[in-house]
Length: 89
Image (cartoon, rainbow, N blue to C red; front, side, top):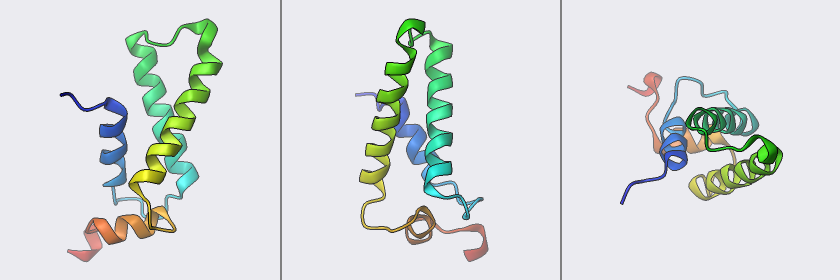
């Protein structure tokens, strides 16, 4: 079974520790932008439904983010707890 591109993207970006000061809203905007661009390039968003699709994407990204970072107050805390930073090496 192939893993969804959005989940792969989310996990890859959650592991990215080069910008530890990135806050949750910046992170979510980045994921939404990258994923939307991916869908647009693939031709998967009909232009007359763009607003509705964007609303669904935003809701899905927030839900996945909450599930993946459950138990941590901030994105920085999640990253420090789960992934070594370059400074920690």
